[in-house]
Length: 111
Image 1 (cartoon, rainbow, N blue to C red):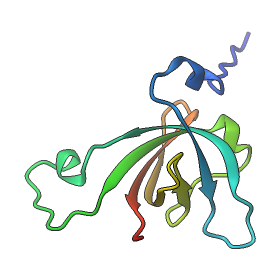
Image 2: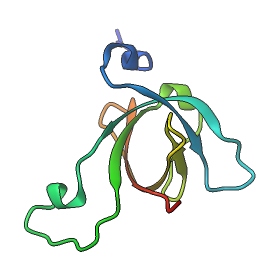
Image 3: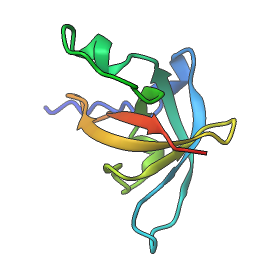
């Protein structure tokens, strides 16, 4: 017997969830609205202790649930727009071990 785990609705049980928009870098792609995400304000300096970063841009790590994305996969260069219409540009993407989330390091776009 195979057990199938479904994490697509887990965001409903996590504090600090935001509904954001993911806009793929590909101009022919459509923006994905209703994306569930949680952000963490860890800086590159906190992630890489002992390494000096000068003039570090405002950055966030976004944990994005894969369920609401359908078949869209976040990629470096894609944009995230938060509830305050602040735009973030994804720099790196990692798929979490369970496949239910993407961990995206993003920097705030210049305004």
